[in-house]
Amino acid sequence: MNIIECRNEITKYSHLLYEKGLVVANQGNISMRYDENTIYITPTNISKGDVSPQNIVTMDINGNVKFSDLSPSSEYLMHLAIYRCLKNIRAIIHSHPPYATSYSFKHNKIDISDIPEAAEFLKEVIIIPYFPAGTKDLANNVASKLKNDDGIIILERHGTVAFSPTLKEAFFHTERLEYAVKLKG
Ligand SMILES: [Zn+2]
Image (cartoon, rainbow, N blue to C red; front, side):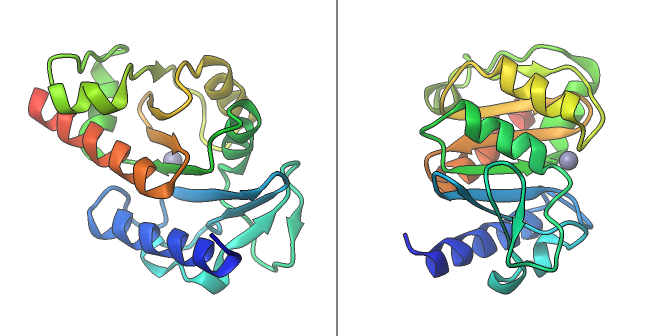
């Protein structure tokens, strides 16, 4: 995938997240690892419905912004921490799916093993205890608790983070978990 395709891919899935109600207002963020030291990430304070290939921010793995006047998503520390931890991951989606997020207000564990389709693709889903959005504490806690090298986690009272070698799979993880939690009622 070249740079243009990468930016188009992030744009496509940003719009899908917004259209499917997995984020509202300016919530959520998406990134892709282009090469070892180049990350593309959605900008802060822009609705995912308004993301375009031109307003996606380029940064290095240490968080330095390159060639952009816009600031990266406020959750960039969490994205970078996951990329540093999981070398095979190239795509991350952080969203606020209503059912999965709502579930974490009342529970600190989730078992989806009784939903065959979800269990097959998502393996074990963990719920990370609450830390304020955008903080180093949240980033460090997410990175230290990751068990699978491809999957999705729930952030207590906040949302989900899906990570995978492709953006398509990260999006599917998000949809699959949301659907599974909806079924569980
Ligand atoms: Zn969030």
